[in-house]
Image (cartoon, rainbow, N blue to C red; front, side, top):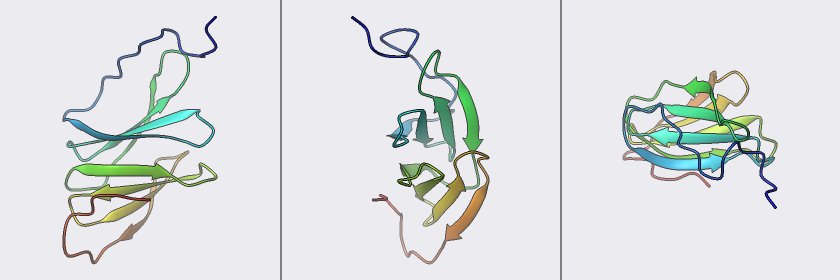
Length: 109
């Protein structure tokens, strides 16, 4: 008995122009965010055919980690451009940049 809302048991998500370094589900399990060497994050519907629903842009180097906030309203990105980004999860708009790191930001927790 399948209990998943996916169209298939295995789904291939295509869209990044570089290697994917990180993935995160929102706490409700409705949206998947992938971060890539191409400096973008793609947002995917986590059910059905997993269509791409938005793009987060603004970093100048690879995205190394992504996390959703507990209420699923924001996405935090860590990048090799020494910056943490905060994005609105619904609109994809960057809300804030945390600058000042002296090196690559590897992770968000």
